[in-house]
Image 1 (cartoon, rainbow, N blue to C red):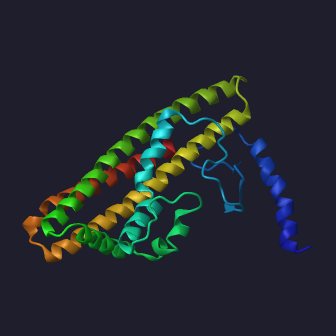
Image 2: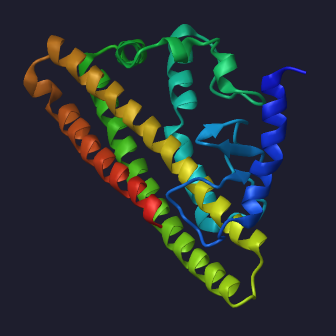
Image 3: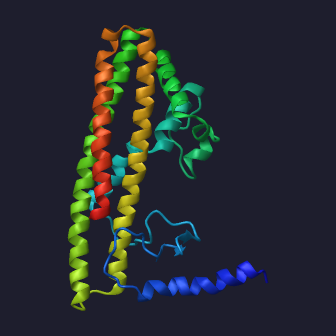
Amino acid sequence: MNLQVIVLTSVLPIVALSGCITNPVTDLTRAPAEVGGRFLFGGLELLKPKENYGFTGELSASEKALRERSKAFDRTVWQGVLIGAVAGTAIGAVTGGDAEDAVSGAIIGASLGALAGIYVAKKQQQFASQEDQLAAMTNDVRTANRQTEELIASIRAVIAEDQRRLADVQTRYQRGKATEEEVKQERARVWSNRTVVEKATLGAKDQYQMFEGAKRKVEQSHPVTATQAFAREVKTYRQSIDALDKIAANMAKA
């Protein structure tokens, strides 16, 4: 047997057992050591984690709303729809499997600058006049701002719930009225929620960069007065992203 395999197989039981002997009082600055098929050893991730971190309970209404609102910022979805709209590929309603497979790596290969060009080209296809093109882009950013506000409201609600649940389960555990498994489940729930927020934040940042790139493109070929409304909305989106980034960072302190 290969020496590396021997070492790995001898280590895994120890890693699995470590979750049974660590203090169950939650430390949210570190991911659960072993949940949902994920193993960490010396900072090395040996197996790919599940996004729910092994959480098997029911999501609350706030958690469901968070996941629903985060879809607007899913990079695979909005970038895929954008590329597909210009290429004439129907990928907006992919069911089953990864959406990335549906675009055959086009999303991965496209830079944000290229996506900005694709976005402007899409508006040029949809609208004949420059005025209508700019109005449509302005409305898109305005919609993104509204969706970001809704996402932030959902995150705040989920953080408040996480804080209440964690405080409750830890108090009950210390009184002998909750099991270690219950503590692990609440910890997994928190990390699952955090993962949703992290993905949405990354997607929102990419979307902002695309809009910013589109703004620079249209400013090169339009009078400043014509692009002012679009530029204002992009600036507001930058502020929305900053607010989202800050509250997402606060999830580590939930």
